[in-house]
Image (tube, rainbow, N blue to C red):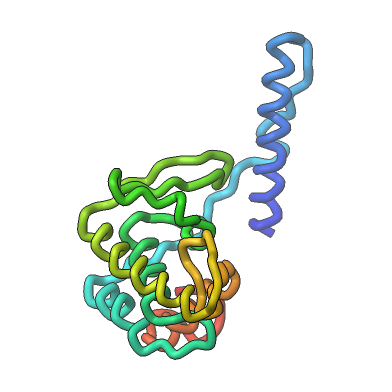
Length: 184
């Protein structure tokens, strides 16, 4: 029920904003009251990884033997999301052109309604250098060209659903996520 109320509050919030905009030109215009769909509290509790868990998570892709996700790419994907705070979908959608090694920035194309530049440190730049060299070899072996930053063994861009599933399985294998459900 709280999920439905939260969705209704979000939708009504957008309607309320539009009505406020309209009232600038017509002060007699209607604005729905907040009490029709009050905002509810989020029941989401974030999980904060310990330093040891982060070390294990970064090391774990070295033993990954999936069909399309190669260890170096999976490790880099995890390191990029950890070091930059990018959402997994933002990282998966990155193109090589979005990576500026000279400025040490990533260009995040429209996500949640806006684009932004995300800076990163020199140690992540060194990680990118190693990854990019390995990526060239993967593309050569696959006989493909691809503009996506994160590519699978097949030389094609990885997909968000696949990345999410692989990382979820990795977290479960490490005991950092329960065997079932979305928690953890």
